[in-house]
Image (tube, rainbow, N blue to C red; front, top):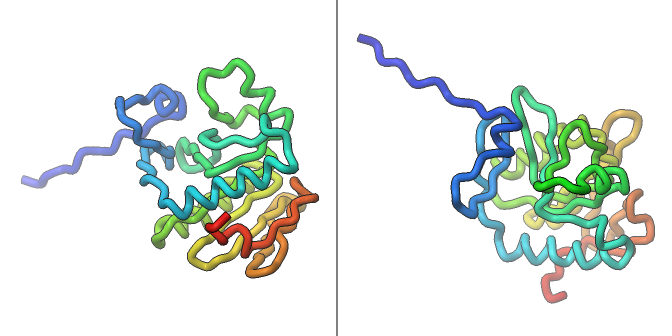
Length: 194
């Protein structure tokens, strides 16, 4: 007698929003499946913290967020949680009164998302390939891929319906259309003595 494997249960976006397993585990929703996000490394946390402080020098604190989710497109429901994001006034206003910091597809996108790449090929693929496509499809004006392993920052700028990627390394300045007065080099981002 042939055995059958049970079919997977896929969550809708609304089921994801209502999901609570009574733990502190952070999840992203990928094609209807919950994907547990591992704890961040100390290096990644330090980089994200440094970028937060650097952005605060040029932007209103109310526009900078961490822990905010973004619903994106996929085969099934998808929701990502970038390390940092910068709201537009419209995306921030859309969250006013919300019980959860989740930017749904019917809301305006944020201006900028920042992902600090975690070690491992799965994480690299997620940030460089999958999220690159998802954030572009969402119409997010700028996406930064901050890569501690390669010691580079890729700034993806929305131009005519797709991202144009610029890789910065070493003493290169990070050129941002969202934060044009930012005077930050890649070396500064990865200098953890800050």
